[in-house]
Amino acid sequence: MENPKERIEDILKRNPYLDAKESFFASSGENDWQAIKRLCYFLYRHHKVLPIILVDEYDTPLLEAYTQGYWDEMIATCRQIFHNAFKQNDFYSRAIITGVTRITLMYMSKGTADADLKNRMIAF
Image 1 (cartoon, rainbow, N blue to C red):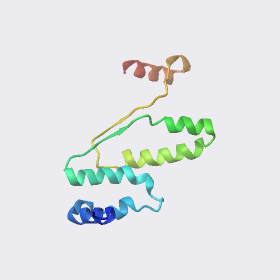
Image 2: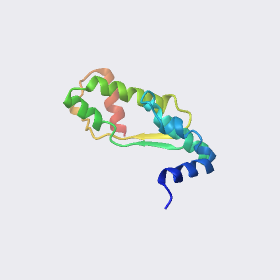
Image 3: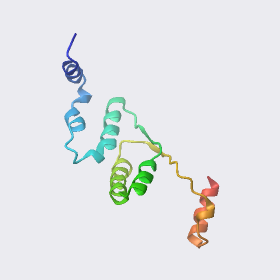
């Protein structure tokens, strides 16, 4: 039986679109927040179609960070990830982001800016 590492190396040699494997998989941790952007690039490069980014329950780690006391670190990380995944990424067509936190109109204040937000939420 062939060694799994040799098998992977053989596959990477035969597929030129995987030539950037080292920059994607061998991370020093400094640029991990660019993983979604790089993955979109590789998907586009291979399939010639811009991918759709689906992020489910994005707020679950934020809720956990809030309750466990590391909110500032988590929010900074999420901002960096979302900034790179959505704002600085030319290699995706659409994105859908869902959360689990329920937002009700009862908890919103009665200011004019909030009234506009209430109307927008009701429209959805």
